[in-house]
Image (cartoon, rainbow, N blue to C red):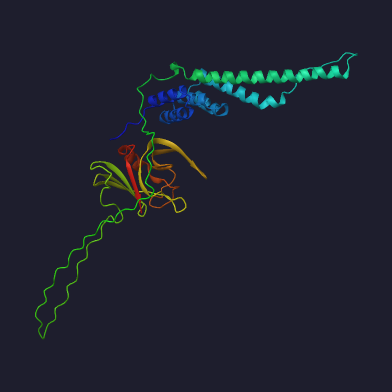
Length: 342
């Protein structure tokens, strides 16, 4: 059964609810998704500005201002973020107050040092109060952005395709070979020998080689008769989509290299994400589409950074063409079996 993707309005609503609950990571993900759906709308950029640090918020507020030059929230956000950053940058230099202390003729050395100490203490207090006030005003802006009048009317909550309890995968999977049928040779009639003829021996017929060598030929016992499941053949670099005993489609994919191999075994999808960021040693991939994680950080997903399908070159995931990954994503659910073998 295919799943409906969240709309722009639903993404904004989820971002606000997550922010109100204090879940900044989820709020940022939903706001970013809304910005990708409707980059010409100012609301997602305002939310991103409100939940980001001052330096990053400048870029988000500026984007909102580019969309609507009359947006008051964006102007206030830029001014206060710049003020906070400027105050932070110049704070180390402001260690003295203007003016001089002129001692009287009868002042002693001790009397001269006391006002200097007071000047230092006063300056430090003023700087601390100023920095705290600026940050407080910047934080208040974050509450302004979440006001209801900036946002679309609320929509019913969207159920995410996420299951909390990750299933424990089977460490390895060894497919059981299906016995190959070998026809019994037909007995050849041998005529009675005569002085002039000798019968030629009849060649034994060989069975034809199967077209799907290496693929599973039957449904694993734990999978239902009409259940959708996924097979990945690392040897042929193929992903085969099944429903029960029927093969629906086959795709050429790119799996892990010998340095970062794809895991082998029987797993189940534990979370589906329309888009997610991926990072590891030496790489960062934003907005990876149609991601289906089945074991720890291993998943099946769309690919926009290469087109070398049929060649192992991933960090362990199963790379698919984005359109093909979307097709599998629509049919798969949390709990769908993924069988990986050589």
